Image 1 (cartoon, rainbow, N blue to C red):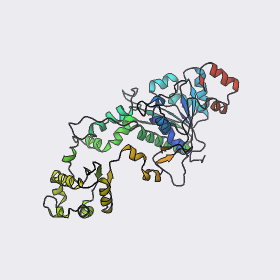
Image 2 (cartoon, helix red, strand yellow):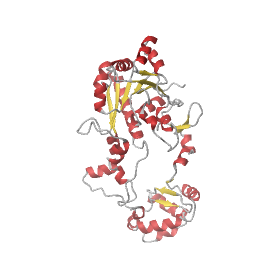
Image 3 (cartoon, rainbow, N blue to C red):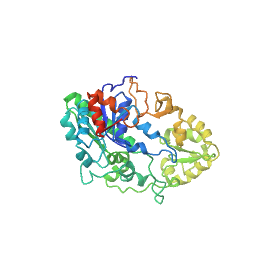
Image 4 (cartoon, rainbow, N blue to C red):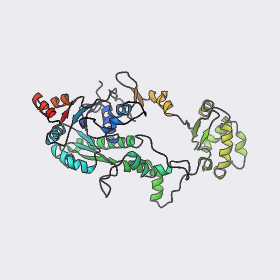
Length: 399
């Protein structure tokens, strides 16, 4: 295994579902040792998610839990908490997304664990933040990131269209990246001060950041209306169009002064430049619906593959509306290391979304089964065979 930037960094992933564990996954990509704490028995509830209806798979578990070792332990008994404390004493980062009251009840709140190890960075994710009346509320990215922040309301084809459901993990993964950033910032502070502390973020805060442009409008007192339907867009040159084969693409021609003439020539519509309805930027916006209709008719004459060549040659910024199947086979995504093979050669996974010059990410290892490494981890922590057997007998430890 290639040693990464975080080689020697010990991380305890005491979180469930996606956002918290995914932050630990990013650390693992760069070489951190990650211990996944799970309740004995079924383990993390994310294991039971069904990626493909009617088919037993662990695809999502492999994505979020690669490179980790699993310790299945019950933290409720004093013996289980004692195991955690021994691990915490040697750890650098602890990550959890348990609701705040649960942390208090289990005695794994920040104050509890920082008392054991003041150098610990306590990575915390919550639904609605850790202050205010809703701090104890539970939530998922669908509710706290997507629905609560205006994103769900705004991302629809028009004011009368139904709100659109979010994709699995759509808010969790960017929130995990934010927690990773907070943890790394806290580690940098620790290098300067010698002290750990709490690094925290929330689904609500990340959803507001994602919807920051419209939220900022409102913060300045503007009324934020629903976006108009596609055919009523204020700019026909920043719109999406359907091709002859039924495929769509999104065009973003924003530098009209430099790009418009070449674009019109490429689509064989140079005459539009002399049309008084489209001669100036102001005129084009005033007649955006008319221009949209004209462009619709033009783009309907060729297939997407044809337009891809034409628009690329003309230097027009655009993107085909790809299916998930196409995204998973994207050669460019593999070229940049966004999609990487598992170390055992059995398929690919989605890598963390950034790279550092000169740093090689760890080849992703398969996610563990529940408690796969319980006994080995306790031996490394100094437990004797007799002590491990006792913990098993008490039902605190599972292997």
